[in-house]
Length: 378
Image 1 (tube, rainbow, N blue to C red):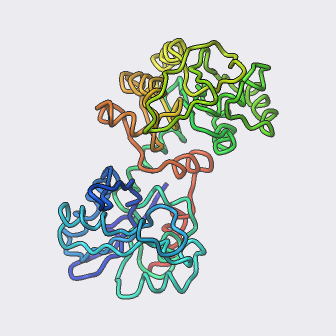
Image 2: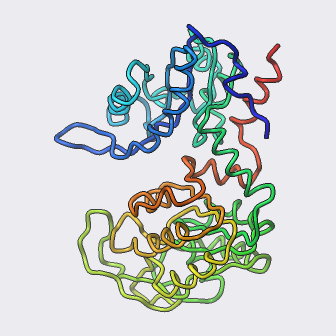
Image 3: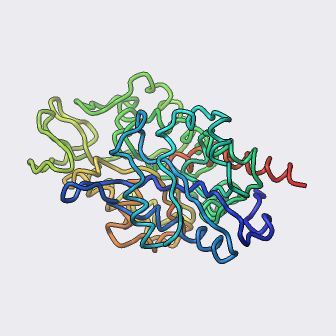
């Protein structure tokens, strides 16, 4: 895919460049103050910022943060700006784009306000490129525009899996709801050699096979779709599961009893919260034989340490593989970073939903807007 590059913008000395970055980072409260809990996405924006500044540009960053309903101090960009002041002094950061409802409505008046006073635009937020928002598709219609380094890197690495991935090509898909990834799974069925399914979404597949799911999360209205997918593709499901009594609380701060391992059937009064050790071993064998790997989504309730073992095991298997490996999604990326394995995969994507939509459709609204901007350029 040919996208306009920063070099195509010409001489940037003294010009003001608006950069749509992905600064949607997790926040935490420390000593009564909101702070950035994970600066991975902030650091991912730095290469583009420095690339522009070395060419003499004056850079302004804009981004959304969370999903605020109007102006909400909990989602202020102030903690992000504070980190950036240390990492890239002098770079201006606009307030949270989603404080204004015109952003998600792709209102032309908001795009005009963002573009005002700027000479060029760079889209570097691959994680938002699948959304037709004012800062993503509206501004490129008003300014000379280009793709940032992070966005180009994302497209380049993901395109390998779209165009001619080395075989066997194995996809590992997890997460809570099969409905969120049904489109991707349908597209992957035509392209991959095997799909490994984990997370709560696996229970809808297991239900389609006639297994007991107890009180596990299932989407009964998608059982037939799962059954149809299993008829079309080689799909590996968990062979054992970690379950916990349904009345027991779960979560990041809960220190309750550990779960117990069962087979594919979840007993009544319990719910499945992770894949078991046999599944990690069997999935690992498939991963070891792969030459291309896509991993998106955790294998269990990863935020609760008691049910993070399956996800961590898959992270180690992917990192230990010699395959071309692309990992996307917050929990998948976090598992690799926490295990110190982030540098042992081919590409760690900054975009969760955007990665999935790109692999499903081969294009994104933000990318199309950049190409259209290039066509209008004299």
